[in-house]
Image (cartoon, rainbow over all chains, first blue to last red):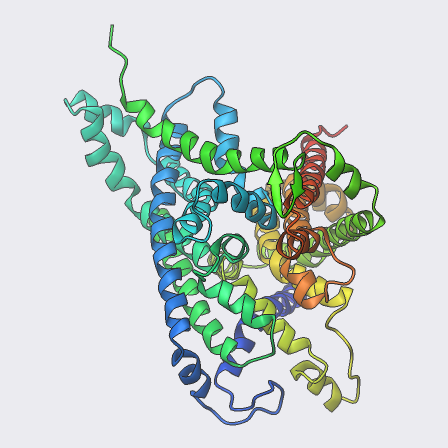
Length: 260
Length: 279
């Protein structure tokens, strides 16, 4: 009886996973398919769409822009996230709940609204249409994720560890450098990869803010507004591989912690 | 007496400065902007209710509002119902290792190229696409799945389902197993155990999952635009149209504020319900 229901649940789970992964797998399959219009039965295997897509200089430029933005935004998000997580871990102070709300609220605001608000604000600062503008916006969105990951890691650190370092004569700064930071290193790497993935995939705020400096997802968004073009599958597959790798590294670092 | 140390503030201040300058600042500007006027394609600071009056008295705004609210609610309910058996299976019918791998696999798509996934659905669901080819072989169809409420729903579910399953699984697998066994021993049927023990015990996680599904689909622009055919427009499509083609940022700001207010009301009501003590 228990066996049978277990099998039913497993079939259901397979169906759910099929639904979730169907679009990812579809995109990969059709990126290697020779037919112009994606349908079954498949044509033959080809690298044609990759060749045409990556023969275009604007595709390379978009990848370069995306990489610059993701690396910089992930760096800033991780620093902000760690500083905030450490503050939450070590200190209690007045208005702390307001402080935490400020730290965790950004992901709940719809991206379209962030895009509009950022467009107006960065425009006033003379930053709209620049990569710096996109980096700023992505840092706002990434910091809460980085904070959550670092906070989780600090949770498993014995607060006495830092105190012991002080008692042994370490200053607060050197305790941070020699005790807290090494302990948090997996979380920092994890936060860096995850926020880089968030930034690499974000397109709405970038689309509002970017102007002529397009990132990869913004380019895809604009191609999508035209005709179906299998080149998107090729570009999309590269994007998938990039962000999947980043998220996997991020998760492996988190798991490493729990097995220690 | 120790002198005031710099150390705590080095960690505390950066976030306040950054999120103050680049999160609170832009949102406040947007609120202010909703009272400004556009003259000769330029915004003039003002304190004027014209934009508010213009948007809130128009039928098309309210049409978009109710469509968005309806679709987000439907997504929250459907995603919760579809996710529940999966989460239940993950929590109670898999080993801890298998569960961990499953969660691992669910986190990956949540952070992975939503836009490209929606494009893939556009390919899959097309009139002459792969799914209709399969249906055709089986003697059905072809079905029109794109540019409809159904298409948009597929997109919303793609966005929210992994997260809802994760949140539900966490809350289900933290239920005390003794509680469930006690219910069995006291002669409760599987149905009774589910409805009177498991669901109430996992209530907070179930509601949080639904709230996230609501928030994400309420603000999403891609699913209704590329799979739903943007007819009728949702609030996010309205914001983009008003901003991008109309240059009417103040009116878009009005729509945005209405969205934020709605999200806050729904989120607070739901969290209130989640933590209310059971009688």
